[in-house]
Length: 267
Image (cartoon, rainbow, N blue to C red):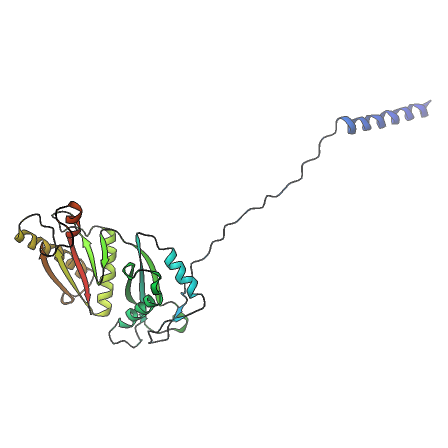
């Protein structure tokens, strides 16, 4: 009798287990699918350009990646920008003037760019890098920079135009103008070159008033350069007043173009 009770209990347990699996089964946890993540590659900016110089030499030696680098410089230049090319030299390199070598290097790199970019959209500058010529730094003697080319500062041929508001000589609180003049000051201090500044006006007002206004505009630029360390003997200022317009004074657009200073580096 006891045996039958045990057997019955086992049979009931077996049927209960089958029923649970068939009817009340808990679904298995879904497989975890790892979604592939796309990680954007961060391409480091190349510190050393594919242009190399020998110590005390201005000849630019290009490396195999120069063509791709050049094309990238040109293709990434927006319509409102210009390309600045700054040549550097060490203080112990042989120079006819203290910064002439850096300028020659920049000019030679400008020629390397060929006809891919209008020369009016490129600007050369120069500076010093350090005391002693170091082999490991000879690929780091040219600096490229995109600079905004707006109506406030415009390069035309061998001179730069800086525009002024109506009846005013105050334009130097503008970051773009100051950045450009900072570069000019650095170049003149390093190279020993001189800078000529000529003030111009539109034809609104008397001839005498405009001659004085043109002079004040030129002197405002001169004052900024001197405060940045340029020797007074390196700056020449003149005024043309309303006598040399570059646009039609009968329109506001033309008058705005005539309210300017012209800045030119004299070697």
